[in-house]
Length: 406
Image 1: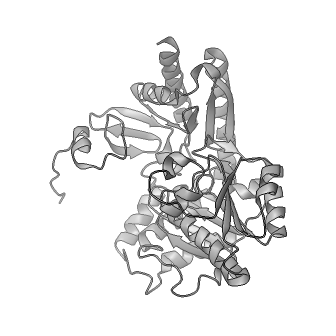
Image 2: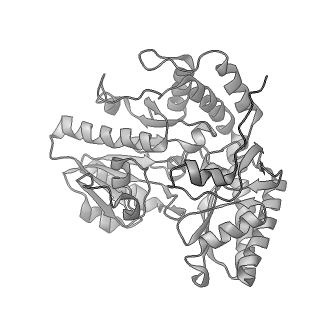
Image 3: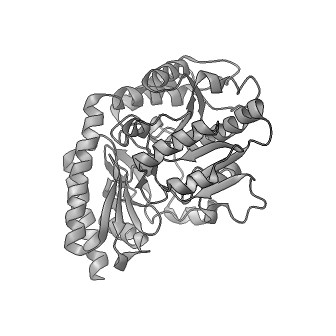
């Protein structure tokens, strides 16, 4: 028996929701694979992926099965007890990565919060209170809590909330000399995204990450990789650090990890994990059986040669068409990213107009993203089929033509 639903429409958002978002004019109600339908029954192609979250698209049968099965067993038990899905997922994550230990939470921000607290705790315990400074990159994004937004290198998100967390320095991304100049024996952690997501889909240079690793070792600082957006198959490896051959001390994961179900994870080594002893950090919902059951199934599907190689092949299909469009319409100065985290960098004439392209795409029944004002971002399902890629890109071309001809 289905419950009766009160009718709602997009106008209700402006009456009942805090105005911290300005959502699109339509309301999606159903999704299947890489297609979404709104209240009026209009079908859209989804190349946004819930901001790199829907790693297996919408309503993937394996995830529906995992969630439904767990829903009939156990929803929540708290961390006063452990549960089977959390233990299974943790064993699989540690088997697949450098890590020995996992801390589960509910979001990327919480995973980063745990990582930054661990870095400071470890340094405090071993070297004393002076060693608490964190170095991060300009234009980085690490979440919206006060700590994570302070570490993030975008003042527009951290200004206006009173005193910021102290001891945080920002240096230009991909600039080895700037990092060398900033790091000292007071540094407890260097925090980097292997690919800056919100900052413009900007990949790190291999030499930069290698230098960061060496400098952290030299100064007894932890290297933290924020792989919230780049992780869980998004680049064509399970995590982007594997592409670079540079191993962090701490890695944070969320977004694609849950395939649409909220979950975050901080991965680290046995030695470091020991400093988050009983009572030092915690979460009510972290390790929730529903979230872990779904994430375990995501990992089972994604961490296969078929899917990971498919991501790299699909990247080529996207990039070739985007470059072609860039040349035809003069809209892109370049296409960058890795796997299915792709950025179309707007040419000089269109700088600052990313939102115009996103809006035009919506009129062509296409969901895309921006990464700042100068980059169009695509982060679709990792298993999107070629027909949906081609249809999505055909709609994108029509949207580009709209903007160019306007």
